[in-house]
Image 1 (cartoon, rainbow, N blue to C red):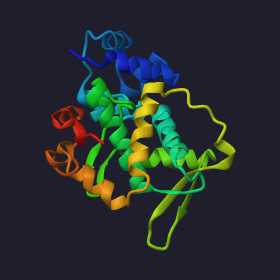
Image 2: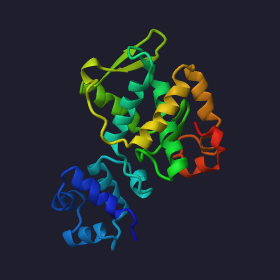
Image 3: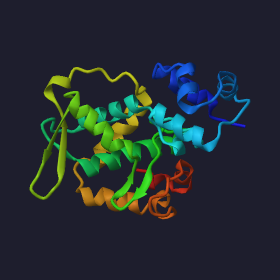
Length: 227
């Protein structure tokens, strides 16, 4: 039976989607869908694909019971930008992506859970969730960050001046402290240094290209190599 029905119900409620609407879209009876949300019945593969599309999450996220918290992930981005010593300095997009990865996986090392529930894939330039790019796009559209492109093709990011007063409500104090430590360690380092660091950690080394990286792999690392 399904083990992720509570997350599905929570996400559906957050997105204000009714059971009736889902039943029409995925072609399932109301009674069957209610049984699914109660953990008493499974949906077919095709129905799960349609459901994941409606909820805006990948089927992989649903299967792993890892429903991403996009709003919290965006706050993680903003909080990292606010920790930079030079507030006018822009951070390379690649370095920002690695800091987010280190925050999520370091938090799992200590707490056995992710900060954001994002699923990270092993890509050429490092571990990153598909939603990273969408999060940046939405933050820029909302006027919360500014993105510039250098001649070398490097994208630089900073928080917009108009967003500096936005409160960070979804991160607890302990999460903030961990992010501060990660930012302090890596902000003055070259991007390639943090890329090399994450590429040489076990989670990245033990996975195949484009494979989802299990959070559990970070627990096999030595504590001094977590971030």
